[in-house]
Amino acid sequence: MDSIAVVGGNTLNGTVDVSGSKNAALPILFSTLLADGVHQFENVPQLRDIDSTELLLSALNCDIERASHSMTVKVTPPGKPEASYDLVRKMRASILCLGPLLARYGEARVSLPGGCAIGSRPIDLHVQTMQRLGAEIEVEGGYVIAKAKRLQGEQILFERVTVGGTENALMAATLARGTTVIENAAKEPEIVDLVHYLQSMGARIEGEGTSVITIEGVDELVPSTHRIVADRIEAGTLLIAGAITGGCVTVNQCVPSHLQALIDKMRECGFSIHTDEKSVSVDAADEWIGTDVATAPYPSFPTDLQAQFMVLMTQATGTSVITEGIFENRFMHVQELVRLGANITPMAQVAIVRGEPGGLSGAKVMATDLRASACLVLAGLVAEGVTTVNRIYHLDRGYELLERKLAGLGADVKRVS
Image (cartoon, rainbow, N blue to C red):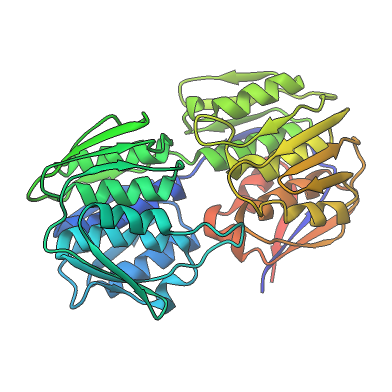
């Protein structure tokens, strides 16, 4: 099994391009199930989760062609609309095929999903949404079994903001009879990107990027073409990598407004951040101060950058309080950072970080989830000696060749088999 070895101490400088967003690409690829024919995509990241999605779509009778960062999905009706356990168990986003299959074929059998162990992340809101739209649903033998002659538009009020639930509701409602109104909808850029593709297919949707989205169902959708939006989490990770090493790094091919919460917090720490139309830059800083941060749904600080920001705070002057407001079990990286010498006290969903610039020492650590993998690599950039990050298959699920991008900026980092 591969690991990543990082020799700390190098300052990162230069420019780096961001890949397409995993969290946007996955629901968009599943949305192809809504329309037979050829769908074409650009800026598709090369990731394990994309590979898993390809396998699942192929099992549903889709013909897929990939070349570099382009992808063509030719959709034809499946023998049976089923997503089996073997295909779903590695990726939680697989539940996103439920809405499209049910809307398009009137039935779906989808295994309960797997993915990162960062909390319970129940699928109750997905199930309740399909029931609200008129589906009959049973959970039996580890599968969600759903049936509906045709979904009916309805008022959907989410009791809590849910990105995946909003995505499934959007896709299902496009072919429902009548009007669906989603209240307390997620506002993430990835939601907006999905809506833009659905609109290009002929869906009638208004309100994307707000808490109320209205969908007027249509009888049929048609394939289209689309460029996947830039990955704001990868962009933020690379920006933090430059900052934590005291370097000057420009992150290209991103959408700066998608990073505003991170930019605001980094400026609060004392970093000089500059934005252009498609880039964000951080200037070298000799020192920075600790600041508190709390994760919350977009446009607030993203949970997917919490671990990376925590590493930055270990090198700050002063104390920081990190509050995780999305997942109840997303501090598993703390014990690994402590192995490197970080002074962090976790308390339920709050972690107190007492910064000590230069206080980390290299060691063997183990990645517990996708973002924890990136956080440990960042820690290795400033730890004295060699840091070896194991179980990096998590990293490959969501970062496209992160070690090569960091090496291109001057990091001493390599993948080891």
